[in-house]
Image (tube, rainbow, N blue to C red; front, side, top):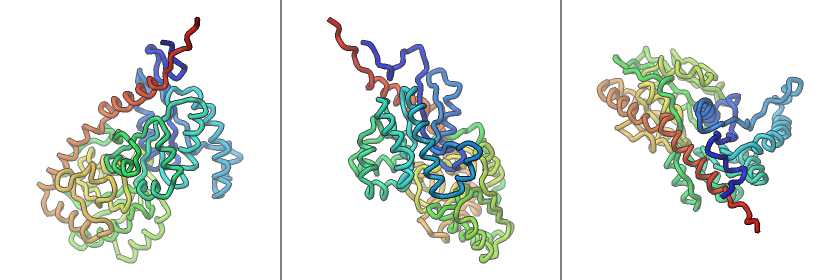
Length: 376
């Protein structure tokens, strides 16, 4: 059998184009794409490169990125030629995907170009907004049903896809247990961290309100908010109205530096209304911070209540505060949760996740192979 150019011979590395945001857009997709690229960098089986959905324009044009609609037009004008160039040399195209308008502007063009060039596609959908997005968008449903494979990071999204008749395999997020080093918190201090972007879906306001109740019991308590977004000013105003002390708005923290925030904290608190498989929770697990979270989306798939952390209902700041206070009142509970959470990280180490991605890539390449025509 003669393999097509989609099927590399065994002696060379598999070429994988990873279509995803660069870390100029700080969020879960960019962080996971960067970790995946870094892990493949020295790998003998895969040669992977980033095809950024947010290409950087030449210097004279960068000021146009400040203008909303011009930014979109400029990005698309650069993105499509980049896809044509970089997907053409790939054996497999790995497309990261969010939802709504982002789906139409980033993954959909990548899938279309890959189809045009005859390259197999794995669509790596990562949005906690999937239930609403797939219900509303026939284009999204059709695209997901038409790709060679769908990979999602959680059972939550797998179940959502199944409800729409779409098959998907689960390959979890990666956590770097070397960078996010485990440390037992003894004694456990009321030093609280939240690393979610300051956007409405993450409901950081609920965290701030919970902190008011925590600080009533522990006046020395601290809260660090590491993230940026549209809710920055309203959250600062809320902290002021509540008369909070020791609240630090750390702003955008680069992925290579975020480990320091976990190392300095003792408890991780997040209160999203919508979520999937947040890297932030895994980072807290790896670092040894006991976790309190709302039960949004895919969080319960990685955090079993009372085993790996404590879960509370969405938008319930009183319950969130009570859970944090429970940890502070019962250090033995906090220690047991943190130990179990760290043990669960073994499933998210690169050594475990690598085999799953490599198996998927090689399987797609085999499927794309066709026999050469018979010559008489």
